[in-house]
Length: 90
Image (tube, rainbow, N blue to C red; front, top):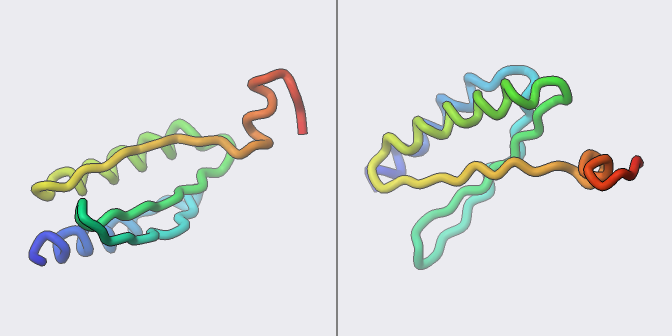
């Protein structure tokens, strides 16, 4: 339970530090045999993708400093943003 408090405190700190070009959706929490999992979506404004990715990466490192915590950062595109990659437009 002690680590849960540490994770909660790190979350509150990270939310307060979000720049205006990042909108956070979630977190969504699940409980299971592997422990607690949290999934959060960060919607980064166009033109701020690189700095948004770096900001979120640094933010997640704070969670890895809590023993036993792991994270995965998975950048994704909307369908409309991905269309130009295959030569199409929306």
